[in-house]
Structure formats: C-alpha cells, structure tokens
Amino acid sequence: MSNLERVGFIGLGAMGVGMAANVIGAGYPLTVMGHTRREPVERLVGLGAREVSTPAEMRAHCDVIILCVTTSDAVENIVLGDDGLLSAGDNPFLLIDCGTSRPDSTLMLGARLAEAGCSMMDVPLGRSAAAAEAGTLNMMAGGSEADFNRAKALLETMSENLFHVGELSAGHRIKLINNGYSMAVACLAAEAVATARAGNVDLKVLHQVMGAGPNRSDFFDWMMASAVDGDETKLEFALKNGYKDMGYFQSMADEVGVDATLPAAATARLKTLVEAGHGDEFVPALMRLVQK
Image (tube, rainbow, N blue to C red; front, side, top):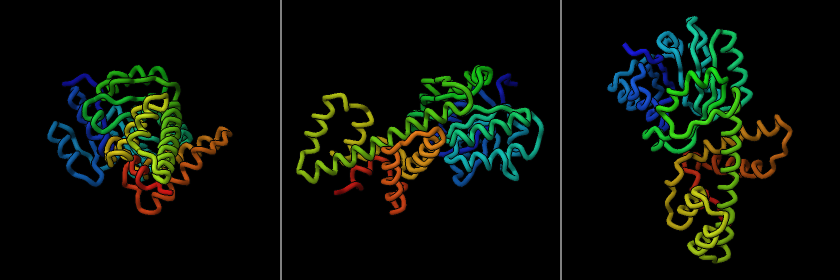
C-alpha cells in the first residue's frame, strides 16, 4: 500500500487531465470526477484512478483535493453545494484551488473549510496545456507554511517552478495581476497593429524593430505571430477566459481602491468581442479582430 496521501482531482480539462496524469504517475492514489467529457476520465481510470460522481463522494476517499475549474462560482458550488465537499463526511482534507479565482471568494471558502477542520491553498497556474502534460507548470502557491510544506512534493509532480507567494489568496492576487497586465498588453498590441495596418506599415518590419528593443518578449512574439503569419495557436487561452479574469481583476482593484483605467478599457474591448461570439477564439485572434 502507498504511504502517499490520497488525492482527488476535479476539473479534467486541457490543463487538469495532464496534471492528474502526472499525479498518478508519481504513485499517488487518485480519485477523479468527470463533468462532460468522458475521454479524460477514461484515460485516468485506465491508469488506475477511481471515479466518483459527486464531490461529497470524493471526500471520503481523499486527503488532498485539487480543483482545476474555470470560475469562483464553480469552486463555491463544489465546496458548498448540495452534493459539495462540505455536505457529507467529517474527515479533514486540504483543498487546493488551481483555477483563477476571486481572492474574496477564496478567503470566504478558506474560513468555511477551517470551521469544518479542513484547510485550503490557492495555487493558480502559469504556462500551457503542453506544460501540464510535461509536468513543467509554473505554480503560485498561497497558503500557510504548514500547508505548503505538506503539499510541496505533490505540487512538484506537476510543476517546474513552484513559488510559495504568501498566505491564502496571495496566489490568486498575483495570478490576476499577471493576467490583468497580459490582457491589457494583448489589447494594446492589437490596437498598435490595427494602426500599423491602417497606415500601410509592414508588419514584419514592425515586429523586427519592436522586437529588437525592450518591447521584445515571448508574449509579444506570440501576438505578432498572429499578426504576421496568421498563427493564433502560440497562446491557447480563450478570449472568454481572459474576459472573466479581467472582471475578477477589476473587482480586486476596486476592493483595494485602485483606479485601474487601462485594464478597464481592455475589459470593455474583450466584452465586446465575447458578446459578438468570439469567446472561444484564442487571445492572439485579437490581432485579426481589432480593426480600424
């Protein structure tokens, strides 16, 4: 029998399935819960995972439960819903939220879990689905020193760079700051390229000139690959998720009294595109969608 902690995983999307595969590959007993797609569940069950139907059922089999879902509402429902983690059972567990969530929601859930004898960490992610498969994610871990030390070996099965960034909610705050910056820059790059097109500026030359100076970054190159070559796959992050994250960033900025005008403008830009039906397209599509 393994002496490793029993792990549960909810949220087997593009990121989650690779993460979960690395967890079970490292020898951790794994329990999974599917949602809509059977393929990732069947893959993990084929590797030896147990499948359950509800979060309440998962709790009985797990010491640590990892969530990789899209919204704070989804996280709250998994924890507090009718069949949620706190609806049944009394065994203590550590909850790790790897999504991009609202810090105020994270703190509320942490308090509710603590009342039930459980604990929580927020560990949002950086990098891509390919990095999730390879176990080379960046992870920004918020939570107590004790919880971080407990989870460290488990998190290292999924990551290349693991940062303990502070107490609970610090991870989500840093992730939202990162995404707020990135989405604002993406919109700015798209408007710059739209201006270049309207003025008959050669986009390859623009990329060469700007890339030779301090504007050069992987992110800039990914966006310019869309503008120059039509390759929108360098950053596989949906516009609807960027829009959601910008809303969370705006709420956080309002909470701390910051007038974040540039992110607000980017949020409005993303809102227009999502409402026009472009939400499932990747962020580099901005270079095509933003016109004069």
